Image 1: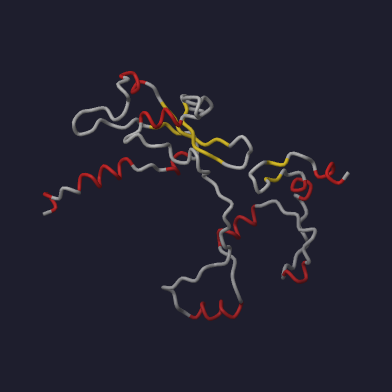
Image 2: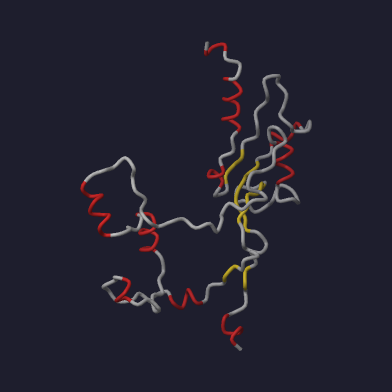
Length: 198
């Protein structure tokens, strides 16, 4: 039966064409689509030289600094866009099915929050779970590692109520105070905090 399944080949083709965004978080060479079963070049608009050109996909920041998009480039350092539309037109012309470049209009990063509370493993039930329930919520390993490696400005933390027994870490206060922030509309505020107070 499996040998006569008419849908099997289509699913395999879809998997091969699936775009893997994580591959392009750094500048990476993009492989042109192969020819289809009929021997036709997939959407290269008859340009026989298109296969000779190397294209690369990589991230770039939006003009206002509030988003990160993928673009198509002609160089391996991802500095020269393939066209005036940040490579979107070239990708669409060369891609299988005349598709848009993923994440070319939607940001790769979002401002959505992720919980740092350790989630219960529904498959684990032992005496440790009972002890954990008595102690309260735990910080996830990922968040703990991020916090340990992060610069800190703990000058406003009341250490006696936070449960922290060591001294406040204020090593990064001057750096943090100098950071520019992004407004809700995505525009980076470049004015200094001192000038706003004046």
